[in-house]
Length: 576
Image (cartoon, rainbow, N blue to C red; front, top):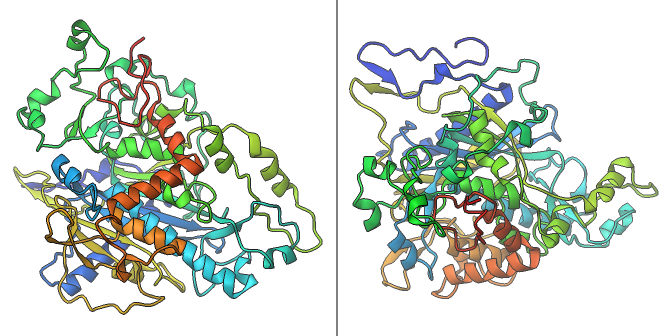
């Protein structure tokens, strides 16, 4: 290896070069490298499992983007890192295919790595809620402070909407919901900077990262003082697209396919409310990077992460009463290629700094519920009192700790004259489900739950030699059963993270309907059921209002056609 915190020397030999210039990067700390290592080991296990089922499958990582959600469990000594979900891919559905799947919901619209990892996280959280409910029914000991060494690994604590002062009260009542334990945190790893604003280096001063050797291997660095305040994040070029949300470029769109890359990058962008003279000055060569557009159907991953910093990564459905009592945040984001701290701050959180949580969502966010761990006969301690005192504090966007890792994801080499090729439609998603349990990193359980997808069609790719699963408590819900598309009648292979599967998973977890494996999917129980349940949960929890507020922040639509849920004004589109 190179110097402390540096990747191995990446100087290429004659006739080729390394796929990643990792030697130019410096890790932020050992924790960042350990998160990256856990993600890569999990991905390698998934690749090996798929190759075992189908020997024609490669075991090399190849040229793709990997994202993973890693849980840090501080209930153990030392803390443990466990990969709970991962995604790999760079493709998404065309607009026409998205429209055709609106009702059935059997296809995965966006197969970019970050999106797949987040959807896998949802499946993990559903499995955790089921496990917590089982533990609640079986024994009051389910709520012991340390669950790390139990046979079934749980990360959730019970929540009660009325105070539970005595331990005896807890055993007589069922939890009103669940929250992630204070000693468990989620950390996102991405092998390359998310597409969109996080790759736009204009307007940001890049300082070389320094390795913090004062931290232990599982110790997360504290957020740098004033790193996210207005003084260190001044945005003086909003109208030129400094904070702009963008869409993933759909080459099937006639308006896009007629342009060459060079023409696109120098094109003017029509902005609602501007006259012709203003439009001529709206050059976007630096603000609209390759692969993005000012029109489309799917927001870039940078923009999705920015929205998640406001409303959480769990989505609307999981905030329904009886499920999660508060949003799930990423405590840190670790990035490999194209890391720039100033750019990352702007793209992933600081451009949302004016976000103010709506009152209804703020009540949820600030914990108007009680999760006190108080033994019989004792009064709440100061920590508990502080939690109760902060109920009425204002809530803004969450700012994750940004970290860089010098550990290369793609260790391959390019032959002379060759470059990166991300043309493969292969995508992979995996998550820890009901089969997870026991000790260790769960790579085997994660690999067994992995799905191979076609990123261009959004369908699961059948893998030969997959043994049939028997239905029962230990099998995965939302099982990979083939379905017929209601519109075309053609057999399709549905992923467990499609909208239809998530709708059925939610219904099964709610006890109101069978799982996908039990035949829940019908023409009216796929995408339409997902949309209906999402709208209902979003309205009651305040999530929908909070998301509208996030999408309506000033400057986000200075270049692009606004999102349908955004409320825009001249100030919000960049005009003064």
